[in-house]
Amino acid sequence: MWKFSRHILQRAEERGYNRNQILQIVNREVNVLIIKSPIHEEVDMYFGFADSKYILVVANRLTKSLITTRPMRDKEKMIYKKEFENV
Image (cartoon, rainbow, N blue to C red):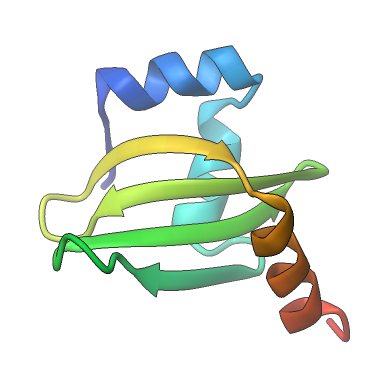
């Protein structure tokens, strides 16, 4: 079970995301690219598309904590689309 940090809840509200969209991504209910953080060994970055929004969710896989979220950057979105264009 994922734990929502206060920070991710604030960022999600600011960006118009809801808990369901975030959970769809981290639970892999939609197409997701997962990349390990180059800085923190226990952190993964989940890139997903939920409810017509390209969203990045940063999560600690050891503590199951959801850290933050933001829209994908253009380059990230391009890579995501290329990976799943035939799906």
